[in-house]
Each structure stands twice: as C-alpha cells, then as structure tokens.
Length: 260
Image (tube, rainbow, N blue to C red; front, side):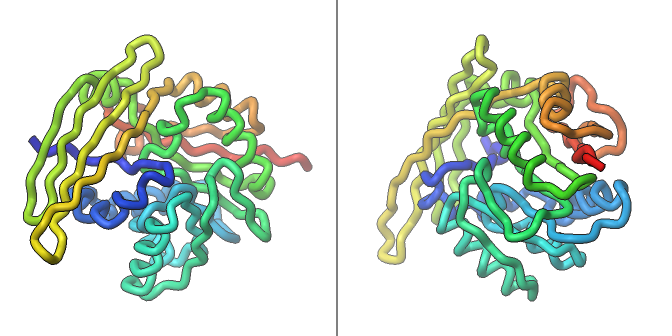
C-alpha cells in the first residue's frame, strides 16, 4: 500500500535526503506554493525576506522564489540543503540556504514572513517547545510580519497513520513503515526501513525513527496569542474556509502584533 511520506525533521535525514523527492512525487507542490503565495499576499503587500523553516529539499522554497518572493531556506540537514541547492539551480533562482535548527534560527535582518510547512510543527512533540518556537518566530519577525504553517490533524495522525503498517516497492527503492500510536499523548512513533539499490546492484538498508504529535487548533491559537500574534486565520486542507473534522491538514496564518 502506498502512503504519502511526511518530511522528517532531524539530522537523521541525512540518508533519507537522497530518496525524499522520489517518495514525495505525489505532492502537488505547484498547488501548495500557489496556496501559500495567495495566503501571504492576502495580508497585504509583502516587502522583505520570507524564511522557510525546515525547508527540506526546497520544493516550496524554489517555487515561491520563482514567483518573486525573497526566500531564505533553513534546515537542520546538510544533505537536504545540498539537494535544495541543486533544486534552486534547476529553477533558476538564487536562495540563501542556512544550516540551522529551526527553533534557534538567526537572520541578518528581520524577515517579513516565516513559513513552517509539511508538518514541521507536528515534529515538535513537546508542547513547551512549540510555544518556545512560536515565541522565537515572533522575536525574529518584523512588527506586523506574517507567520504561516500547517499541521497534520488528529484525524490523520490518530486515525490514518497511527498503528498502521505500510510498504511500497519501486524501481530501486522500497520501504517498510510501521507506526505505533500513543493515544494519551496523541503521538505516533514511526519506524521506517528503506532499501535503496546502489550502482553495483546491491541494496543499501537504512532506518529512520521519528515521532509526530497532533495539536488542536485551539491549543495552537492560544499559544500564538501568548507569543504575540493576532489576526489568526485557519483553513482546512487547501480550501479558503474553516477546517472540517475529516480534514487531514490545517493551515494557520497569524500576524505579529505591532509594538507601535
């Protein structure tokens, strides 16, 4: 059974980086980039840099840069960033790429917007760390700057991938993916073993272990307000209306409160 992969956010992705794009080929990044571009511009004329935290191989970063946004990509995996650098050249864009933990990123100038896409928040499984990340983003943003992110919902984490087993074999790549759900903590532990064919025909095996946690929109909204954000907007899927219970993903935008 094929299951859409989610991006994994630790330095353990070093091996995963080489197969990431091939396994994520069912994501419509053009649609996703267009959705974020529209959402960002809905807050008004955007002047300044847009930082994408946990940018991975740069699928959204490159597309948003191509649309005219002044992007900066940040990721904690050097091999993800190496893949992203190649992608920038393919798209014909110049984007600074920074090796950094997204929770402690620094920029020379305060950006106009910060993005954290593809479940970045879900991989912060400690609620206090989510709140510290929100506070850090607020501290780095310009006054009235925009923070935009998405999260996988309880529906997806608890009912669609929790306690599930998936596997797929492609030409040169196979994986076995086993999940274990902790209902009390709303977390899922993912144990994924990959088999990648090398040039000599032999298969190299490597393993990823990751955890994700589901958060409610009420929790996230409260933490955003506590961190100094306002004008919070929440969308279900890639629609322009409120989330539904069956949605796999929600997108949240907020504006940094001006101190003036």
